[in-house]
Every structure is written in C-alpha cells, then in structure tokens.
Image (cartoon, rainbow, N blue to C red; front, top):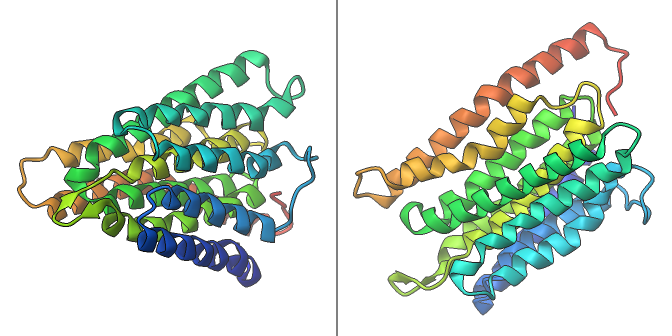
Length: 290
C-alpha cells in the first residue's frame, strides 16, 4: 500500500510541478516545455522520497540521475525536424543499461544486460515513432495519455514484484505525464491546423522512464516482473496505431477507441498481478517487499 504521505510526494507534487511547467509552455508556445514538465515532475516526486547519493548505493537509484539527461533528450528532440525526433527514443536503451549495470556480475550477465538494453532501445524507438504517427489522427491528449496509463501500470507491476519503492517512483512518472497530456492539444495547434507535433518528445521521456522502471523491476527483486507483463505494458501504446487508421471520420471517437484498447491490454496483466500480490500480502502479513 502507498501511504497518504507518499501520495502527496509522488502524486500531488509531480502533478503540480508538471502542470506549472506545462502552463508556462502553453503560454510561451514552447513545445519543449512538455517533455521538461514530465521529467521535472518525476524528478521532484523522486527527490521528495529522498535524494540518492552519486553514485547511488542502490542500482535502481540510477534512474533518478538518468532522468536529467533523459529529460534533456526529450526536450531537445522538439527542436529537431519532425521526421528526426522519434530516433531519439533509442535513449531508453541507455537508461535501462545504466540501471542494470550495477548487477554485473552479481545478478546479471553482460549478455543479459546488453540484450535487455537493446530491447529497451527498440521499444523506445517504436513508442516515439507511434506518437509521431498517431498524434494528428487521435489527438495529442489521447496520444500522451496512453503513456501515462502505461507508466501507471508499470508502477503497479513493479510494486507487486517485491520492489515497492521503485513502484512508488513509477506513480510519480505517471502523474507527471498527466498535465502534459492536458496541454499537449492546445500547444500543438496553431489556429485550425496542427503546427507542431508535441507527443514524440513526451514519448521519449516516458519510454525512458518505463525502461528504467522495468529494468529495476525485472532484475532486482525476486520474483521480478514477468517477461509477459513487461512486454504487454511496454508495447500497449502501439495499439494506438490500430485505432488511428480505423475507417471512422471522428477523430474523438478514434481517440477513445485507442485509449480503450490500450487500457484493456494494460488491465489484462495489471489487475491479476495486483490482486495476486494483495492476496499474498494478506496470507503473509509480516512479509516485506522493498
């Protein structure tokens, strides 16, 4: 369970910080402000739970320090031509690599670390590309909101895998994406037509945070997040592609369908895992989970 005090730190604080930056970005018409809002919101939520040392004693705390260059990459991508933004998503692989590396050679081989990092890089590319392709057909709100849903599901899965504190950090990540989703639409429009894509920059930051959460949730606890759950949540936003090209005239309807598809996919793995963890905790009230 997450305490009320923790919710103030990892839910309310990230929401407020992200919202303030997103409002300023909307006012000044700064597309790069939305990825910054997500990264800053996550960073503040994490910091309020305790700022880790550098280098950190716990390998999962590298996610805190990697959040800064990750946010810079997401914000910086908005300054590139639109067709060159999504390749920056490869940075998700670097985040995963950095989080897992402290386990070598104690809990993971170099082959496992490299393979997972390459997989995370590919997923980062796919998520950023998906955001690029579907934003105009599903609305920026729906596109960005799908990443908030995925991060929230990742938080639940990691928390249920005996790595509670990293799951709590995942709540901060999901909360920080919310205000970016709300202001993505207004910021992306110039009059009646879209002026710039804002979703890819947010997707890059979200994909990197997702990779870091799952790198910790898969390799550090016992048992870790299962491969099935990890893949379903990581790839769930790709279902937006199916909704984007439905033969439906209404953009709003396509957007709702896309979010429903993503939500169903996430629920199929998140709900059973959370219920199983709850039952296990009730059967073993003296157990601990990090």
